[in-house]
Length: 120
Image (tube, rainbow, N blue to C red):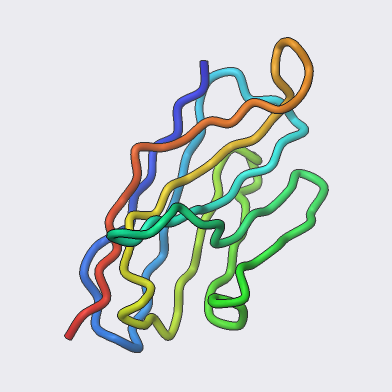
């Protein structure tokens, strides 16, 4: 089993910054991808950014240049530094871990989500 715990959300004014953290515990493989997704009210969940164990990163176009994803030295943590926040960044942010499944293919794990509200 894998557990993901997010922290760092909250209320911030437009133009402000927040840093989200996610810690994974349990059966973590060395080869995996950790990332962040978000879901705004009335919208589908979307990818924000991910970081593979090989060092590849990918960002949604809407956050490029404003958000930075990073991983801790222990490889079981992932961070999302969010700068120049906009009201449209308001959403519940979910930490995700993708790693090989027991029967082959990939297995997704999700945190419970953390609310980020950008408002004046």
